[in-house]
Length: 332
Picture 1: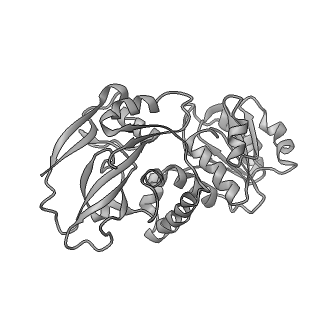
Picture 2: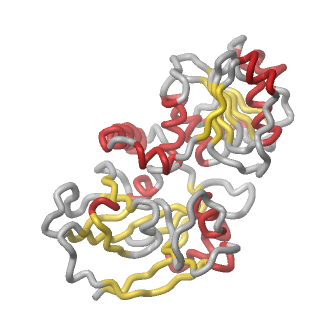
Picture 3: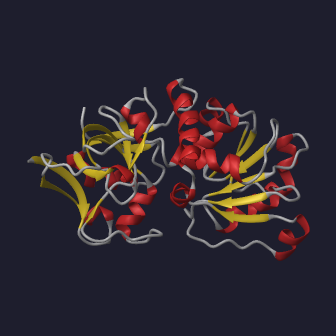
């Protein structure tokens, strides 16, 4: 038997109050034929984790719930019928298994292979934020080098990956933030233009782009901010919503939709993984893995916490104007 540490919740509510850290016994001596024993190494605290604990996410896990939608671990034992995974390989438990635990046993189908050669912290944050940015830049508009993308929440984790990936792919970005003073920092990672929410993009976007209309808008705020993005789009552009930080619904005038022939779409990376072919996932991981390994793609870390301090990590992740990702360091 192995004693493991698990961050969990027994009820939904304020994450600062309901997240608990417990020890449990794990029978690691009798793996089933397709089961895998994984030692978890690192895991981020994502907005989706906060929403799950609050009970407001798209899906509610059964209670008590082992927490953590994303993380990286190392395979340390496999059942006799396991063929897809190997010892010492980096893997990610799929959502629902719980990445915030020191070790776990899962069926081979519940684990995703991660690219070789990544540091655990890089691997732990590969699957949600970088993947969300990658898919939105590839799946909604056929962008060409030199095209413009406009986004709000540009200082968020996804926003920063959008900036870096767009720069790598030779797209240009107009980046909307809530407060001034972020221009130098975001331009250093590849942002072309950085403006605040007060700017009327419909009236000013062509000044920012040198006469071009953006073809893709990425919305993580909603409300008036999303409308501002929609006004900046050229004909037949796409407004893609992947978050709701402002907690306000979209309100796009009928005329803007009709006469500009805009497309309004939603994107949820969890659902994308469920419908994507394994080869498509591997292709994306290979591309993102190379960029992470080579330093072309860098995630900003605000602070690291040991697993035993998961409640404190969650509280920190809920702070406004937090600069960077909160990480749980689980095993060395």
